Image (cartoon, rainbow, N blue to C red):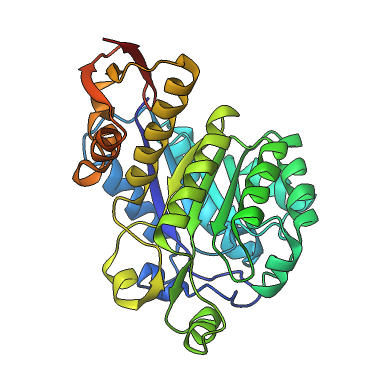
Length: 333
């Protein structure tokens, strides 16, 4: 299914304060607040590209959509309705805070054909939330997530890895707590230190150091495993590249191919796990892969192949369209 989001950024709007890590202007490159005509223009631009999209959503991101003024929220939602009525747009996706959900809000969102709600949970560890000045607790996430699903919306959850006061154990705890809430989608963001944030000040004072790259990759790979085995779709791993982000980034784990690096490690881990199950001393192995996963299995600069060769493996890689994506089959030669 071809899917497209028409992303409309409402940067920092509705947020009651600035969290430790957040500067939406530096991430998105704008403070601009869209109005009805801007939403219409964005939809028309997407429709004019003559590309068949089976599932086209308008997505309001960048702030706390349900915490903006009701009149402004309804203005934005109303601008999409004619396109939904004509089946040119399938629905609306919004992101918001866990403490900005109520029956009244959900009734409005249902009326205006919102189909998916993503909660910026960031962590399910209360001390981490407190240190990063989130203004909500883990129970707010649980209550709002439960209510969202009861209303029939698609639930999405967003988390951050390596926040101030967090560690591997706490990040994996968040992932496992997400599983219990049974979202359809998850987004995972390694913590970045942006200019003009509390984290930037803590970093300058050497009170906060970001996670090392390899540790972040290890944690994110474990999270991919957790969500994959529970049939939860990770729709984003790492922030999109942008000139504004790169110009305002002080430190933290960011790479334009970060997801591919993690998925590459995931395939390496799956290979080693299958070898351990096979319990063979034969190092000559045939590896069957979906052709689209070939570069991921090889790894950046052939890092996976180099590591497996150092372990004594002699591999024959065979492309096979019947193999499921992000999976592999092995057999002795």
